[in-house]
Image (cartoon, rainbow, N blue to C red; front, side, top):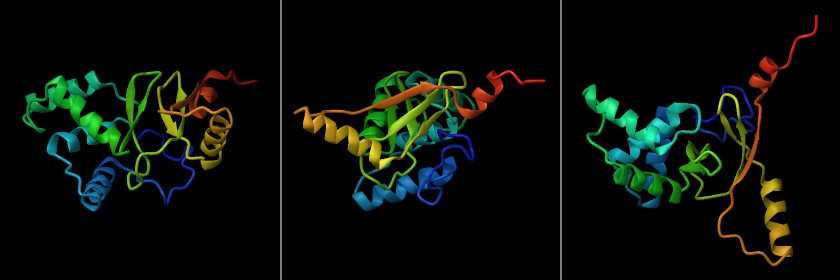
Length: 174
């Protein structure tokens, strides 16, 4: 998933950990909502969940092509097919798009319909942490309403260094 084990996992009982468990949770959510998780959608979802960092669409295409050449996977996937799978996964809240890096990450709570969450993105290792904080989202929405602003989409991304990269970048004192 899009976080390092033990980092910023605010509510471990609420999140799904592990790519296979995540895909199974999404399959269950799809059944409950009357949606169809096709093999290509499931493969794209699994690749995003396995990546451990934001994944770009063309990285997905490369990985699917490698799977196919190794005799695994779901067969050929042209760019429009992968983009349709991404659109489905985004529209149903199973993944998030990080606009600043034009990449995708798995959603930590796939049973919840589409929702807004802030992300912390490390500029060194490219990890992304979904920061589930209802107060931050509510404050942003309330301020927008107070200004008469009607949001159509919301992506809040904070760039910096994760704790691991910060620790590595900070010189140790003798």
